[in-house]
Length: 358
Image 1 (tube, rainbow, N blue to C red):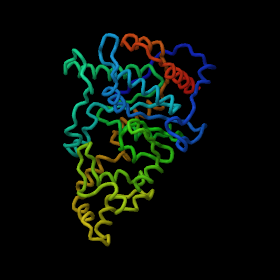
Image 2 (cartoon, helix red, strand yellow; image 1 turned 45 degrees about the horizontal axis):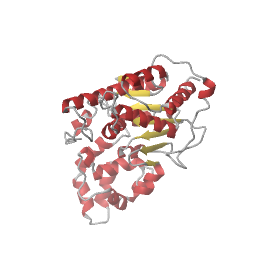
Image 3 (cartoon, rainbow, N blue to C red; image 1 turned 45 degrees about the vertical axis):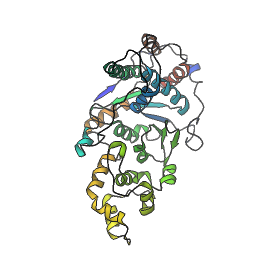
């Protein structure tokens, strides 16, 4: 397991000033999403999702003309998120090397055909190979920045960030906290609960368990099962013929219940329902596909080895929350960031570092 640890030194901090800088609540989440001032909040970020979003659209160039949009843009997004979500703890989850391999052993076509992430603009004097090298450098450099910040950074070889995030949400150390997952990925609908919500920046929406039930008529506990019937074109997973989420809601109304239904129960229902609709026959005939999709899509039992789970838990429980502002500013100068106001990020990092050392 590869875990990116925090910085090793702390600059002098004005404790009195830092403790007065906690920002106001609910800027992006709105009324009803926060559970109260006294409840701690853990923000869990699908950080590769965030990085690629910044890399593609942020046009920032360094002072010597090299693209740094992924790097600078990601830090800008993080600054905005921390200011708006106001977390007591931030956990950044990366996709590990070969992260999708376990699912590809279940279905070799999983995520097949995806185009490589490219800039949405031409950069003068940058060949395709240079662009690839620059993209890798920006991502690696971003990890180095995070090492100097009071955040927990997690990377596990052969594990996708989806599994890491789901596992983190189940940890006893955050059990009493509100969990705010930051990702555009709809796979996280199934993870939402009474104290776990999802913020989707690109869609500009924040969802809780109640929203999912009202919008889809499906409880998060049954959402992976519903999506296994529907399939997922973005992951190259075909679904059962003529089945969409609206169909699932209409033909399987019991999936709105909190009870976690099984594939066996769905198949049994389809065999015995008093209806001649073709959909039920299609599901029975597609049972193998349904089971395969479910095993790939479900996050209720994250695909992480017991040894890696222990290491992740250890790193969360023993995080040191060091904040090395001096080193971060030095890195920004080296990377040609130019003028930008990072006061909000640094002020909140002071607060987080202090509060977690009490």
